[in-house]
Amino acid sequence: MNTLKKNKMLRIKQVKSGIGYKLKAKATLKALGLRKMHQTVDHIDSPEIRGMINVINYLVEVEEL
Image (tube, rainbow, N blue to C red; front, side, top):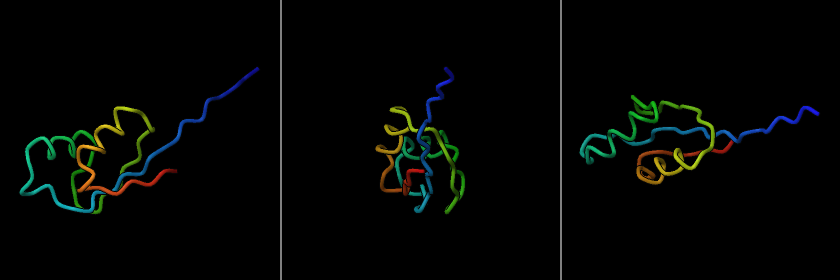
């Protein structure tokens, strides 16, 4: 039997600039791969990614794919 586990994906979009926020918020944006305003990246849904999103939830929008 070939059972493939389908991982949920998250589409993360930066909607606010990191300028004026703490260095931790800027570092989290960079770790997620977000460099510019309105840039979108896709990540596999994991507790680590969810934790990063929770730290900067005021700077990003998240959509489940």
